[in-house]
Image (cartoon, rainbow, N blue to C red; front, side):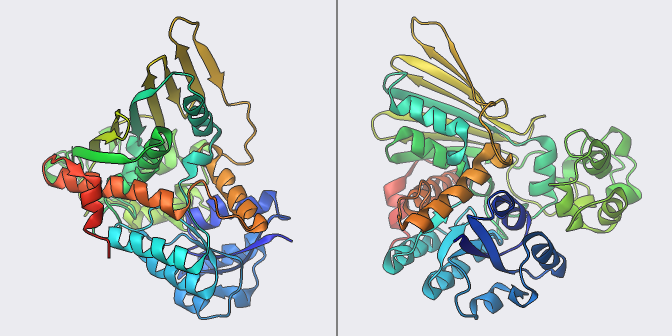
Length: 429
């Protein structure tokens, strides 16, 4: 029998990233219910996954007022809605698959951790990078001692100028008071990977960063409020909405890009006509210099871990490609990796370089380098087996959230060094 799922939040992540596992393995996953305030998304839930109309609800509250409908509640709503919904789901008897971040409120993160232990239910957080062949191979090399004792880690998240403009200037994650700070919303994945590779606790963090470019005072002369309406700068503007969503190589519909982010702009399968209409009237057609965004466009974090391991991290909007790169050094060698190329370069001191290409490893769908599929597979395995030893369970995830939220506290305090034990203790009961 397949593991059954109910979905709270039928957006891009809930309905398309994780639920898509059912399309490949219907014998293992079955979506049986869902909730969303948008009727168009519920229509797709019925069309794509065969969910009965009487199991489609207009709110999380309505869904959770029903008798328990599934084994797992997949929660992929907005960041600040996660914990209240997850707490109710656990009380109702569901296991929980929770989109990251858990919450921008560390007190809420710790509350959910306690509730998971009290109920004995599985809570898996969607840190999908651990499930990719790339990071799994990297962790295995470190754990086997292929470069000796790990000493330093240096990683860069190349957000991509177009991705940043879509999600963090015009889109849902543009304001930290409505969602989460950038270091948590986008880069808690990276904090989680650092913690996993180190294999020891992070002790202290220090961070610097700012919103430098996407501000009204940086707008070129003649910039209008909307790209397709009153802007005199469109021809030379790399952030012009038409270039990004219609004609651009990265995600333009004329380049055949009909999935994310275009389906987010239109709320469903896009056409050029529906995209243009959405850009004329909706949030994604706004000038990037005249939005109400406040999250940083670049940030650095310094970290120290138990065992003398040190790490540096950079998140930047100002890149062509949307990818992650990493370099590890150890007492007997070094490793460089590029997630987009799915390639690791291993240099054991005094030996020829080894190139590990992971592109030949089959992935049923490409989300996050195969991590979306890997995560869906693991939650099914856990529920079928009755085990609780998730690779990204609530205990592991809370550690990365402490790191990210402490880094944001450091940034806001001008780069003050934050002791994580003391920082976390402020939020404990």
